Image (tube, rainbow, N blue to C red; front, side, top):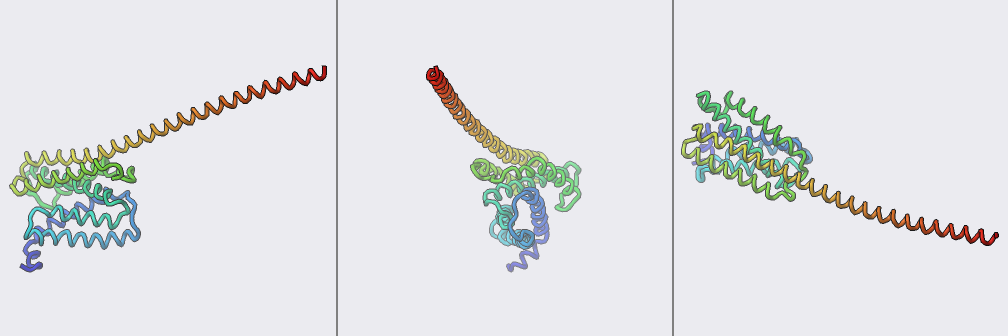
Length: 266
């Protein structure tokens, strides 16, 4: 089957992936807002975003004809390359933020489904439930997680454990949710609620460990500063003692000279 025939027969899937990528764009913006940008940023943002959207929509559909269940992975790869193309940070730092954005989008999607289940409305990619769910989730996640990125100039430096936690959390959520959809259990509340907590736990671990790592580094730096100050204090103390001894000796020498001068005059 020709590529255009595959795409023509997948209109609803194209709409779904497009909405998914747009949701990710917004989540990525939350996490990358504070990062240092590359030269010609706006041109990179426009060109890269267009390429990311086109390839992210078409390739998963085409490849999905032969291999199923890798849509999220393909979009993740394109998003990672797109953010690296636009922002001047290490590849691992960008991966950390990209995983955070995917987790936030996943959380928003699960919240949207729960709203549909509670209100007994049919699930639609573009709906009032989507706007409400994603707006609430994105605002809370920005204030509690994404806004903290500016405090970490080097996220991945000496924080390999934090990065691995983020990667494993994303893989677990992705695999479990793929299984949920394949078993047609994605609209069952008893299945969706655990995924909401799984996403929250993933973000908590990802940014909690990052914050803990930062505090540990600050404590080590403070301990080092205290040790340096203690050494400086000991050095100053010894210097003062030496000066006092020299002054004492000098005082005695002056007194001896005065006594010798008085004896000569007598």
